[in-house]
Figure 1 (cartoon, rainbow, N blue to C red):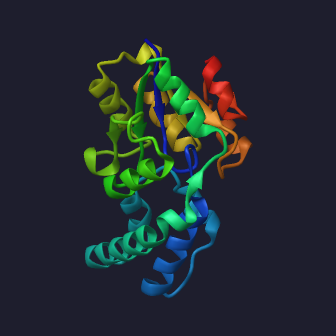
Figure 2: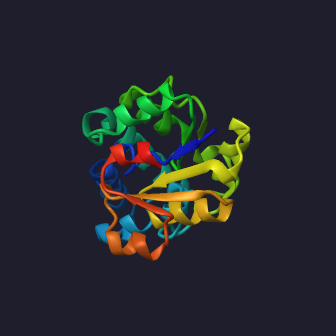
Length: 209
């Protein structure tokens, strides 16, 4: 049986402006400078704590930055995030075909669950591996391997679909085929440098893999 593992932000959920706005707000509250958006985009696909730890000057400040970001982000989540066109129909069709499905995200579970509900995919994506479910986040293969274990699926028949080089690296290290999507925020040349197994420009192309 085929297995499809999906990243969330930038792959299923168009939430990049929400993420960037949340980072900008957190920087204004806690730092004496506001890093450029390009710095935040470089970290897309890795856990929030990993990204903020690069700027925090202490563990206490890191904890405070985490709280600020999460409160701001969740307060605005449903108003600013939305599904990428076509992705919900594709996931529902894959579910009808009775393939294995799971979410593998660097988002914490409260935000990830909010995103899945917003997409209307609670029934389809019942297996979810989030940042607080693993010791090592992407690009480490642990999240991908944990999803495969939960599904009792083998890597040989699995695809990991994502929008960042971190997704591609995590999938490759876990021994699964990787799919880079062309509708996320990361430039194609950067994703191609990560050497994905497949490239798709439209969600419907996933049905043929």
